[in-house]
Structure formats: C-alpha cells, structure tokens
Length: 456
Ligand SMILES: Cc1ncc(COP(=O)(O)O)c(C=O)c1O
Image 1: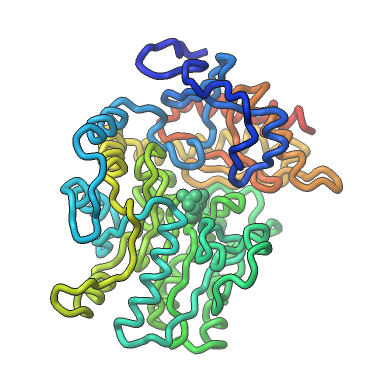
Image 2: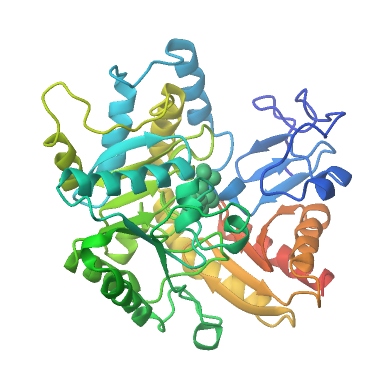
C-alpha cells in the first residue's frame, strides 16, 4: 500500500468531488451508465503508477488511464509546468497570432518524428487529429491539381476516434451502425487477425503481410486517381490489440507510394514510447506521409492531439496560396493551447530525462513472458497478443452474454485486485505507464490471473 497521505498531491477523499451525491447529470462516454451509477468505480486521486479511491485504496494503473498517462500520474515537472503556464499566459489565439511555446513544442515533436515529417498541426484530441489528417489529405490532392482523389480507405476493426471522419474510416461495428450514412467514398482493408495462424504470438505475427495486397484490389476497382489516402493504426489498439504482421506495413507503404496515395498512421496509442520507440513508424522502419498523435503527448494531463505532416504536404499548401492568404482552411480555437503546450514540453522532457521509451523497450521481453506464463494455461484464455508494453487477452465469452465475462473481470480487478484493467468486447487490454518496473508488471499479471480465475 502506498503512502498517499503525502501532502504534495490530492489523495483519496480530499477532492471536493470525491463523493458526488448525484450521478445522474453526467452522461458518461463509451460507458454502461446504469451499471456504473448502480455501483460506481470512483477515482479521486493519482500519483505515479497508482490511482486512489475514496475509501483509501491504491489501484495499480494497468491501462495508463486510457492509454495516455505514459509518464505516470501527477508528475511534478509536468504539474509545475502547467501551473506556471496558467499563471503567465492562459490563452492566446493561434489563428493569425502565435505564442512561442507552440512553436517550441512543434519543433520538439518534429525532432522525435521520422525524418521528413517536419510540420505539426495541433488539435485537441485523437478524434480531431484524425479528422484533421483526413481533411489535409483531401485538400492536399486538391491543391496539387488532383481533386478527383477523394476516396478514403480505412481498415476493418480500426479505431480512429469518434468524429464522423474517424467512424467512417473506422471499422468497429457498434461505433458506426447508429449514425446513418457516414462519409461517402470510403473502403476498408481486411483486418489482420487470424487466430488459427497467429494465436499466442509474442510481438508481430509471421502470418498476414499478404493482406496488404488487398489494397491493390481496391485501387484496381476504383482507379488510383480516385484514392486520396489510406489510414491505419500501425498496431490496432481499441479493437483488442492487433500487432501488425511482419512486413505488412512495408507492403502498404510500397503500394500507396506506387499509386500516389497518402499513407496516414494513426499513432494516438502507439506514439510516445508505447512500443519502445518514439513512434511505431520507427519500430517498423516505415515512414508514412502523416502521423496522428494525441494521448501520450501530454501524458494525459491536458487534452492535445495533432498531425505531423511531411515537408511535401506542408510545402504543397504553402506554394498553393497567394501571398498573405490562408493556406489551409482548418483549425480549432484551442489548437496549440498554451497549457497543453506547457504540459507537452514538460512531458517530452520527462520521457527523455528518464529514458522512458528505452525503459519500455527493455521491459518488452519480460512483459511478454509474464503475460504468457501467468495466463496462457487458463482455460478461458483463447489468445494472448503482446507488442511493446501492451497486451490483449481474449477470453471465452459467457454463453449468450457477449462482453459480460470481461465486464465482470474489470469489476473483480478493481474491487478485489486493486487494479485498473480495460476491456473491449471479450478482450482484456493492458497498457500500463512506461514507468512500470518489472515488479509492477509481475504484480499486474499475477492480479489478472487471480481475476480470470475468479470469473472462470
Ligand atoms: C488509434 C486511435 N485513434 C483515435 C483515438 C481517439 O482519440 P480521442 O479519444 O482523444 O479523440 C483513439 C482513442 O483511443 C485511438 O486509440
């Protein structure tokens, strides 16, 4: 048990909202509202690798919040940077004006990105980042005189946030089927998961690179001159953790380059060390035309997202408009918000100073071994996938009640193992802060084993 009476942070029960007396007004996102409100899993504080509950328990954070708190929680340099920024420049517009820290953060992000990706457009979330990248792709072809390239290609089981652009190219059925016709002119590549070929693989599976060739079929069907961009998560996260088959992303890059189609990597989850490198693009040695980022850029402290674009894309816009004219008609009031920029800069410094990307790379082998050695023999475990500091564990659904067993596991982990896990369908996804030590990894998988035994 941690000593969270430490006066340097607001711990359990000390925030005014630790025990709200009315849970009705807040319509919770992607949540079973009625179940939560009947039995709330309330969090009132956090420090480093733990959350704290109103009844004084320390909860091991197995999910880095929502795949975002890569540096751990309430880190002093980040907290202080946000506090200082709030007191010196709370807000300034970035439409036709600027403040230095936004330029500084953009340069820092570009310096960590693969060579050739040099220009950063800021948004406030992954969803906005995705919509920004899709819009840039369409507009880029237009300013280059290829306005017929309007088709966007996503992938089955892809998750690209909740905006209309993101759910259109996304491939998670429940996120799409309630919302009408979505964007027109969208196709989907097949997803890359095949249990018979890939089950219990550590890291990237050997089987599946050929699935990238389906892009050739889509291009042949519509004509390359109608296709603007392909967007994929290098490692699909929200659908249940699907590492890319070996060679798959290289094939996608070859085919898109051959046909003049832009390749967008949605790295909202995979960026900032999650796979042991700054970006997944570097792990796989594949440079897309744009990278979407969010989450880990501020370690979840202040909302921020954005797009890193190639010099070719940026220069295409700069060359397209007359002197003094706006080059891209897109942006958000809070693009490059000073508080988010301060948080981002401090977070990137923590990653660098503490070698957290390297720590993730170092932990990966032990993380994968622990996942398999604790869980592979359990009867209800059907597959385990690992990649970087991420694992997806598929469990057998309860007969006639899809997702119910995973939900029960999440509750058991929270109440009985003092641990936060995330579930998606009947898959358990773990993605802890990069500050985890081997002992934390061990504790997490031991706890998950007990939870899975409890719901068996
Ligand atoms: C790959 C990917 N893209 C986009 C998003 C959406 O990000 P946000 O919830 O910040 O809008 C997410 C969120 O999990 C994601 O995993």
